[in-house]
Amino acid sequence: MAPPSALTPDLAFAPVAGSVAESNGTEANNVTHSPAPIDTPEVAELDPSKLKVTITKTPRQFQADSSKIEWGRADVSTDHWITVKWSETEGWAAPQLRPYSPIDLWPTASCLHYATECFEGMKAYRGFDGSLRLFRPAKNTARMLVSSARISLPGFSPSALEELIRVLVATDGPKWLPEPGSFLYVRPTMIGTGGALGVHKPREAMLFIVLSQFPVLYEKNMKLLASREDSIRAWPGGFGFAKVGANYGPSLAAQKEAQARGYDQILWLFDRSCQVTEAGASNFFVIWKNKDTGRVELVTAPLDDKIILDGVTRRSVLELARDRLTVPNGGIQGLDIVERKYTMMDLVDAAKEDRLLEAFAAGTAYFISSVSKIHFRGEDIYPKQTNGTYTGILKTWLKAIMYGEESHEWAVIVPETGFEVDASATEKEINEMAENLRRMKANPAFSAALQKVQAEI
Image (cartoon, rainbow, N blue to C red; front, side, top):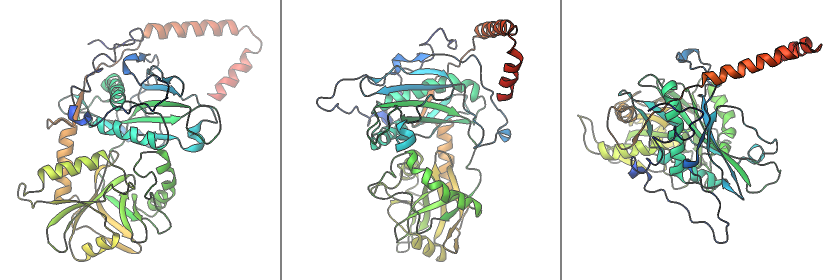
């Protein structure tokens, strides 16, 4: 199929629109529309079929050598992004796929003052068979709806958001994911906008989706520093379960301290019992032998207090383990899969008694990263195995699904379209600007103005 041009606004959307229900059906079945409250005026829903496309005339540079990218300092987003505006009176406007650019935002916007911002983290993968894939996107879009509701941002159809994500990946994926085994980070975000100060539910909002190059973080083993008594990440009744910006900003000082002391992330503890919750922004797992039964267990914190994130990688690890590891598999002992509260004292005892076999963090950014060391108030804790047997098996199974080496319903193939730059239009604009500069040159102030502009850029 020919790639879309700026004059064919629906072409990029056509291969993927309406396909969410056909593929990945079991992933999306639990997503439903919420009924509108009584006496609420009917407003426009988020509708991918109204997508308007404007293709960039100035393509961004793709950096094939990731070692040359200053991660965390350079903006390595792709050529396009998708934006959709929302208002209390009109609902969702027509989505736009357009050239990547800065946001036009009022200084008094709600997101800048009252933390009305949520987002998702997911990846697009170039499979070893050449296909583009998303991993369980329906789980991410459904979770984003939960997050937006927690901070009073507008609702939307998760399947509509998934379709928009597919369109952007289909458009920029061919250029920005050329090599099998590579991935792009996908960041859907919603912010409260509008121009009026005041603590109230946002009356205007903006949904946007960006794609970005991202480093491989899971090849290095992780060292964790347990959080101090005066620092917690989340609490019951709060918003630890939602992926909102307010969960992350307050944690950065602790993370900086950990890195200054030679650790990679904070292992977040809760209350005086030192209940183990999360590792940085990732879910945390241990594999140990049960003290009473001697059976090997895969243990992670539960979701019932809503102080940890219902991670898509976490959910996938648990489901794969329950499906494939509860009985002996290939010569390794079967696991009991346990979601329960446990404390640092439990970890310390397990290590001292030689029962702590493995530990790992799981999330989109770090994927599955083996933990080699945990420091807890003057004491170092070491699992028996780094890059252990069970950790390695789970990582191998998930990577095989993500990159198409195993056919699985969790991996959603995205038909590619790509894009072509209208070079003739670009050349025309250059010529027009050159002619304008020639006319301006006759002005006595031209030289001084030109020097001023050159100094600014």
